Image (tube, rainbow, N blue to C red; front, side):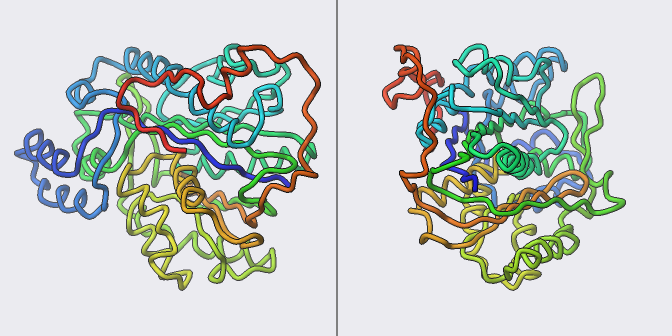
Length: 386
């Protein structure tokens, strides 16, 4: 079975605190009739710091969608390769060992996808398959894991690279003054993540089953208004209560696998906000500490969209993982309303099952791509997380 290895995470060097966010909201929206409510909602998110791809002064300006998308492409090409290098190193693979690349992002647009650029510039094989996912929002991290698992089941022994690049701050719209928009301005952050799913070998979560669930009639609850000025995030006030609708799907999939969803050893879930996690505790009969990794991501980095599940999983690895054979769940939630759910067990790295690499000459450029001492491409001040 395929194993999801240790993710690599990086967040940009520009930081904004909760206090700075609240002060900005008071200054920019001094006359807003619901300012008090918006401030309380932002405080209740539990987000203490967020990282931004641009300084806050530049983030608050809107030069038009064309220039913003140019920023997205430039910053993605600057920041993604280093994270990919570390993810490959964690999995003990090289670009030549990757058979499928899944790239997820809902905060910028490129065609061809970043997958083509990465294949052309980082030494991946020209027959590497590409799956860009652009319209699943925060659920895309879970969807990427599930599509990688599907691929590894169809092609036993294959390896998949997943990349999540989310610059949510590029979606800031100064003319959107609804309470949901003001809340979003204090909730979302920027991050890049990469992780490898190995068809054989590796240490991490060995995926055993995956599933999806869409709640009928909720496709307008989380959406984008696509306008001349770019992507306008639209959030229905019913969204915080969606776990009452999605928790049964988590319980049902686990039950089909013969597991009790309330008795697993680890839980890596999307942290859209504190109520999402609190409600999951209530509906699944779990203790608040169960979601400590997701809560830490939310507190320190905000809602980083599709990258949340990888950041939370990286924290589990940093904490030493869990005992061999411990069962757990990974879940992303997003527009639809959609849940993407994976079930798996923790495994070590049995060397006898490692996939033989294709014989080939090794060049100095190959070594630079994966060696820990390889030159870093991030701007000074960038936070890099193993």
